[in-house]
Image (cartoon, rainbow, N blue to C red; front, side, top):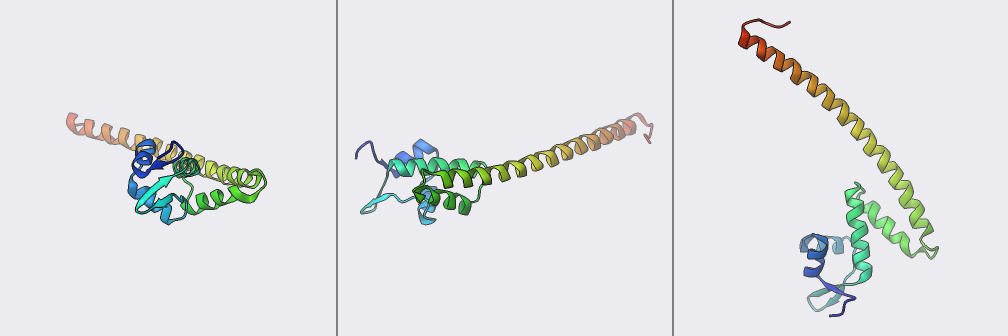
Length: 132
């Protein structure tokens, strides 16, 4: 084995993923390791693609979006199309994440208010003075 390729075990260790995850990405045509008998050898290209897959998943991109973005790499336009589309999807995802954050912040504030009210009610029961 050369330093240009990695085994499935080395990939798992390097990227903190399971072999099952790598095989799943291969099945979904996101990765295409070299097959030598039963052995899979991952190239530098596979490693770069896996980094992008994991980053995309972390940002909430679907596997289909990730696959489409990876497929744009070979357009022959110095990745301009890929970068432009990634930017567009990234902006949409960021807006969605910010909306979710705002909704979560509102829910947290509401829950804290409800818990404060409940704490006051519990305290009033213990002191025998019913709170209004």
